[in-house]
Length: 77
Image (tube, rainbow, N blue to C red; front, side):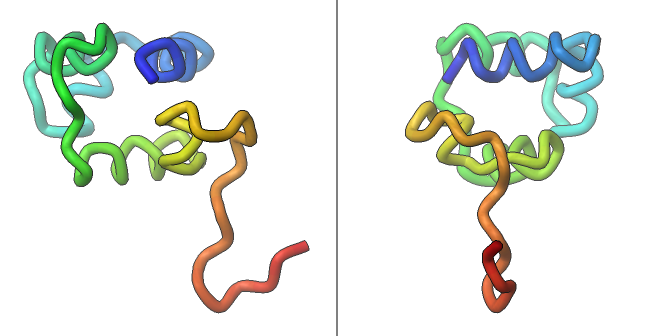
């Protein structure tokens, strides 16, 4: 997961501080998330998936598909 977080952030040329501010955490806390030194709370995972328009499964490395899952009630293509 830590590589996915870093890669997604770097693909957008964003500093850690930007994500930390978005999440409401200190930059060092976000850095610890990226390095795998801290477990990421579910609420933070949800915000990150929303920010990057992906699924939590992608962030966790359970799938290589970046697209988010359709919302409940939405038709799948």
